[in-house]
Length: 305
Image 1 (tube, rainbow, N blue to C red):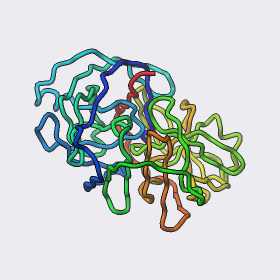
Image 2 (image 1 turned 60 degrees about the vertical axis):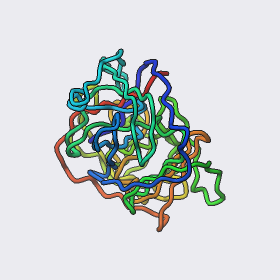
Image 3 (image 1 turned 90 degrees about the vertical axis):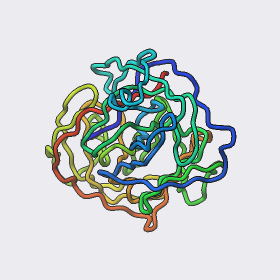
């Protein structure tokens, strides 16, 4: 099970979109294990396959193979870790002259060099959440497409638009579970719905937690337990009926991952710090996960705080 990675501190240069960028731009995405992937150009070459990870606060991650192929030079390093704060490590940084996404060109992108998980299939890199700060980023999972558009979100009377914060350059909202509020990262690379094990005492469950597998983050391997909630979870105006949740033993916040998001249309507005969740039905079901082999650690590294 992959849960989001957080960060520990680095100074990076500011990337900038080409001045001619504007309007609305849509491209298809491929879902692998509920994580969206798309084709991009790097320094005018490609296309290369990059995943989209809103749980990564770096601008981008690139694989060592792509660094070698493009002849990129290392320029500095970043100290990377996950929300547990354990076992941080140093990763080299490279500078991408241009990165073209959905036909739009971004200049001066700082990328950390780290091997993306091969569990989702061949991948040359990862696009992190801060990369899209100038745009409305819409991930339409049912239609398998990404849209970058100008404009802003505004609060909605139906509760579909929710405020978020970015303590580590990743989006954190408040989930409502019964009568409790729980901070959780909206994580397109996450697996399902997870809460900290330390918060389990505040929740009601339909049964005792059971071992559902082992997972890895950048800090090491962990045992994951899970159980079905006796209460519904509210995500904006979307209700998740008594979902099965993972109980993470060391992370201090929850995680809303791909098996939830793939049933929704999700739009992020980083400038207004608002996110909209749209569902054709208004309610979601989230059964227990199917057992699978743990994925290798990923390189989520929000850039500097």
